[in-house]
Image 1 (tube, rainbow, N blue to C red):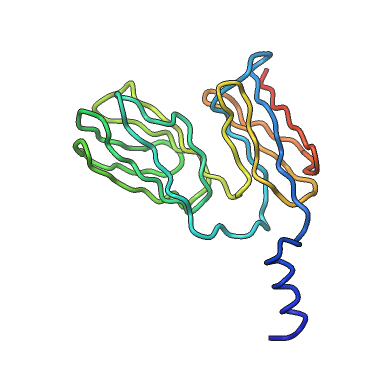
Image 2: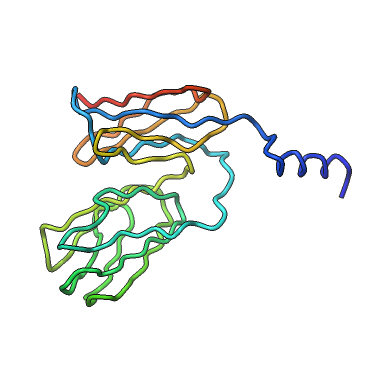
Length: 189
């Protein structure tokens, strides 16, 4: 290995890469804080994710938990049935199309989400059950909490295009600068 390459590897391993910063923000519907809004930065040159974390969309008390899930392209989502009844989970509109078939309590199914986009998730047996999986081509994403707050993971300092989506609303997009103390307010009319 050349000396220059060794130096670059050592610098990166020591955490001396390009400066990065998290972006804190809040989502609103008019003037009210908005839960379950998905916010992400466009990052076509972002490094690939190494070793995806286990991501779960649970079924409990006749509900999908969480109601809104965001994952990076290529993530496998686990669908355990932790309810007291059978479920038949599917998505046949937009995004990833799949049907997991009928499966009992204690059973687990998995689905790879390999294309960006929105998947609406339902149960054939229980029509009141619905969830959303937003798949993004970026490691910099978050879902807003009950107070509308979110924090995007640290991204290299610079200018980005952000996108924001909420159930039942249009996708918003605009520019944001990532740097120390960066704040972002997303507001749907």
